[in-house]
Length: 142
Image (cartoon, rainbow, N blue to C red):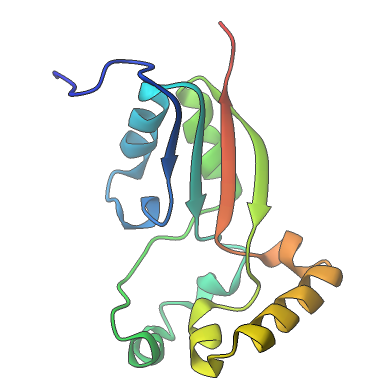
């Protein structure tokens, strides 16, 4: 396969709000790693969050958001394993929100959303159940 980008042509490769919609997400992540010299950054919807119930509430979510679409959810080990296969090590993770985005869009208040998420963070809920999860994976020196 001829690739439009050379191996390691970027310092860092970044993909936000994308892998959950790729059918062959391991290949997609592998390509991010291939073009990166040092790190790849992605985010993913976590199976440890409210996303595990997303299928049941998809119709309600669609009514609230209007433009939502189905997405895959991931266990942390899946992400770690795909990066490892590409020669990368997950160096840092940062879960973002406890409440689903549809809930934040429903109440529509940035102040209320910030307060609710701050309370969840202070209680340790974001670290345990937050989603999406930002991930930085670093190239393992050869």
